[in-house]
Length: 482
Image (cartoon, rainbow, N blue to C red):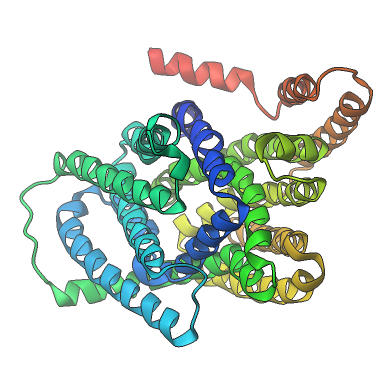
């Protein structure tokens, strides 16, 4: 399974590195620069507000289905039509509840039509992820990798035309960005459905209420996981927008830094999407997951620590280069926020393992405390420190959640504390921090060249300390060709 993981993660990263960074920095960033931080802040707050209701829209079905189909491929003919109907019903309920809350609370940071389309996009995102859970659950990892980047490919084509070639591009509005997202998600969902349809036998779409009730009952713990994660990762933007007189601007600043965190999280999300079906199959077959867990953890932390440290040193230069309105304060927000990726990347490994094992209630206990910690810290820090306060709250919460997941995983799987790996990581952090400091402060080159040198040095250091083991990768690729 280590060999399969290496092959597919290399393929996944290769495919996504071609598409998603260009989307994030070429399209998403350009949209913010075009419409302004405040207007983009309205969109970002609305997106996060609607995201808080995704527990209704998803109800844990994606992870539940991925685990179920990965362990029992033959169930897809029964599960697929029933869950597709259930997704439709949940989407209607999601829209109704979300609009009810909007009207009751008077939450209105933007036009109603914008809220409606962003909510529709949340439904389509959930549908796309469910369809992809079938593709990966059936072991079609590379097709899933390609599908995972298609929505961004369509966004590049549509928004690229509107931003750079359309005669009315000077009047570009945030609404156009939302509509382009809707179109892209519809196209990807249709493509994913066609891929799955080729693997299905004869299916009948009918309302089977006892079966739908069974699915909801079994997916409930997964739903609680999703809900709690949504709250402690998305409530900060909503609280920023609501608590401050200049909340829309501060949310826009936070969104500008969060965009780079999202770009980094692409790596962790790919790991999790690939590891969940693999861990599920191994646990069902009673195989040891220790080797795969340690290898994936070393790989992702080598990348996460490098990204966090290098970004911290070049934080101001990166933000002023990317954003027209950026100031050194924007850089401070980015510098601290990127250390969140170190914690989040670890959670992608240990959280995925616990999900595959079905240890959801224990994980939910950690998440509940994480939600309370995040809300309290945001409430205390935002009024004085604004976006920087929300950043510190997020950083503290994510590390608390990671340590909680590691503790639970250690108790369940009886992992031994590997002092060798810990020593490698500690040495990597110290050497890279000192090296990047020296490059940043004493190498008299353009900052972009210094950044590139820092990145190359981090890669060489990761290989030198064997956090990335070239021999294992070579062996995996050689085994594939034979």
